[in-house]
Image (cartoon, rainbow over all chains, first blue to last red; front, side, top):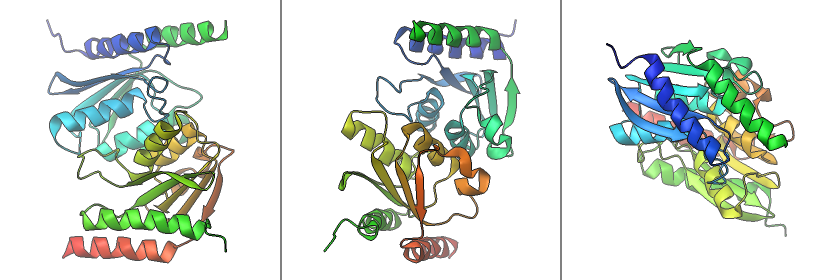
Length: 147
Length: 147
């Protein structure tokens, strides 16, 4: 049995998103995987850190490059529960990310709506795994907010 | 005599860029000004921090929101010596930045080449002050690199 499937890693990212949810943050989670090992885990902390740049992907990219002691993530895969925004897409570009896997699409702020080509040309993109679970968690979050 | 001119603040950003130059970093500097007070100063530290997200603007935005204890920079002005990339433009978007002032344009990686509309619709953009000084410093840096 192959444990290290995309579903496995995306589920790890979903665990991070659920922590964000519990803490009242927009529930987005991310993990970065290098040679089948999770080298960084993060969730959105814009509220806790009062920092609009503290998206899950930004924190994960910084943590992963710290872990590797290298500026590039060419051999790494980022799993994130929501399509990255242009800021995070730009960060992925600079990191020369190997693979981007995102679950739900973000029709409002996703980088793909602005400019799909802003990623690094070598970054392979995969999408859809656990998209429904991620969208449900986000919908629940915003439904609670409006109450 | 008005001390708090755009030239004054851009010169503060240039001082940061020169520190980056001395430290072997791509020489970009930034300051964030709120009610004529510099509340954050930063320079590019991607090499020192081995972090591709450690652009001057990102570090300045994080520092400024920390200083204010607020997630938004609607009343603030960012002065940066080079046109922001899409990552930094996206960060400026999330911060709802009041004014963006940049010196030199970046024909290769500037957000304006990708999508000028990625900034927040309320952000006013000003450009050109000290553009020549900034471009000269960048040219000197890359000339040295190639030696």
